[in-house]
Amino acid sequence: MRADSFHMAAPPRRIAANALPALAGSLAVLMTAAPAHAVQQPERSVAPIDLGALTALDRATLSSAATLRVTTTAPDTYEVQPGDTVSAIAARNGLRTADVLAINGLSASSIIYPGQTLRLIGAVTEGAPAASAPTGSAHVVSAGETISAIAARYGLSVQSVLTANGLDWSSVIYPGQSIAIPGATSPAAPPAPAAPAAPAAPETAGTYVVVSGDTISGIARQHGMSTQAVLSANGLDASSIIYPGQTLSIPVSVSPMLAAQTAPAPASSGLDAEQAGNAALIIQIGRELGIPDRGIAIALGTAMQESWLRNLDWGDRDSLGLFQQRPSSGWGTPEQVRDPARAVRVFYGGPADPNGTATRGLLDIPGWQDMSYADAAQAVQISAYPERYAQWEQPAYAWLAAHG
Image (cartoon, rainbow, N blue to C red; front, top):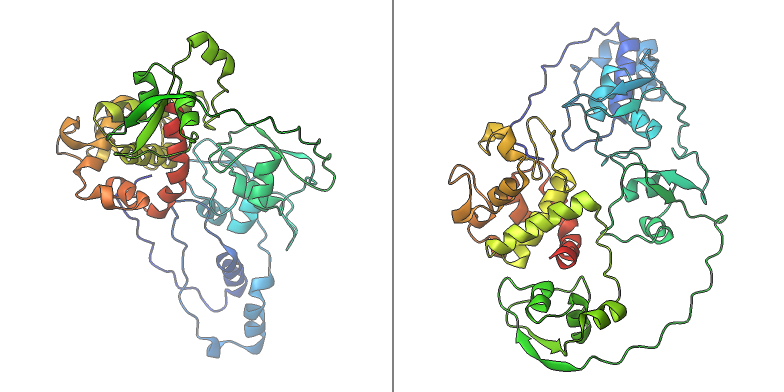
């Protein structure tokens, strides 16, 4: 999401020394609050109190404030509104941010969205894990959850949850999906089948020197063969990266019927149909514009970070679409920003930018090719959390190989 404006905290209010019960509750909330959303609302502060002017009883009451729990009349549930954060919702209802997170199975990195229903009342045991389901059972994914958050909730490692569900670090989970929770009660895995004999190396018919903008799938189409055939002939897989000047072996062509019978199914990219369609569009337009693979990978990762590779009709403030571009910042009308093909071209920028020079795309950033992956994405997006783009670098290349 983009960060083109800032909010200033309200001026501090002075609190009388004789209002210690209220102050104690406020301190308890402030001392235990934890961030829960990419855009944080500032916490309200209180003016300092002259402790020397307090009685011994007052000081004892104040010193024990951190152990007090706030009594609240909050509703059982709350529907998230645009601009809400977990910390702001908790503060408005006299609750601790940490408790709201725990009750809803969220972590400090979880994202909430307008229309989502949060539970405000629920039992949370001090110092105990938030999860109530035993290991060896299943967890149904809620909107905004991540594998890392689910693993933390059950006190497990991320890798153990990935392995138990046949997932990897590039996999994408979705609301309603059932995630197996590994544990001692889980059934033992069946014996692994004997590994098949390694196939003989394919016969090659020639070589091809990679040029800028090439992909394995494009090279395969040029030579009338499957992508898998070219990958196998060169000892590559779907996540391999090729580069200009590299020499690839081109295998002997086989009939389409034989290829269909012998070629293994392509590995899943971990994207659903909507995400895969948007990824293919980003790649297609990148190819048309002559964008190198690195630039296309940056666009794919940026769209995943900003919108989960979905053409959203909502976002932070007036952000919309695949890249959460903002009409109020000159990226186009709301209808233009939600046109996926146009949004992709605007992100790439350069001479073909529909916005002209009104906005700055990737090709307009001097030296973007020499920047780190996250820095290049940030140069276009100007995000409040630029470091978050880096997590999508490796998955983006896998998506490029699968859908390019």
